[in-house]
Image (cartoon, rainbow, N blue to C red; front, side, top):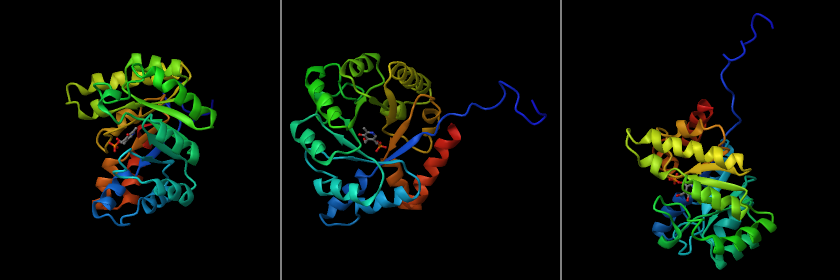
Length: 255
Ligand code: PXP
């Protein structure tokens, strides 16, 4: 060992790069408020691609309240980034996913009966309905993710469903007060580790901000965060490129 080499055990742990998927739905929400074409979520996708986002996340809702069908095609054409297509587990959405073949499909709850009290997809309760959908999307080469609460019952369902990815819902963590937050963080860390031990790639998202992202980004098993509302909100004040760069820096510092 040379004089300058770091001593074993004292060098900081270097974790792999954490991917950032930017959810651009909120740009479409503003656009739709006037019914026209501005602001265009595709322009947002191009900006976030230019400043180093790793993916674009967009949720085509049954009521098309933000992203529309033609946005999906335009987003795929406009950037080389992988599209993470958030969708309800319905026949209509499965058909759309199979038509456009996004890189990933994240199954999210849209109706009350599909979600757990924490807001995630009730993968355990919806097992029979989800099984053929996960299989069909997977067979088409689409990476299926389940947006679930950090709950062992839901991870266990994801394992049985054969989902390659879970996205752990960070909403309860984000909303927790200072006293409750460590317990919420621990749940997410434990479930990320449980998923990884079972060969599932854990992601996380919902309600993440500049202030709360770093403890989540420091969870070693997490491979990707999907963030939207805070970034689009900050973009009003600083511009979207700056907002994404700052989030990226915070995530990198936490690793
Ligand atoms: N991940 C999933 C599955 C989502 O549905 C959403 C949007 O609620 C996000 C991440 C991003 O959440 P937020 O807009 O609160 O950052």
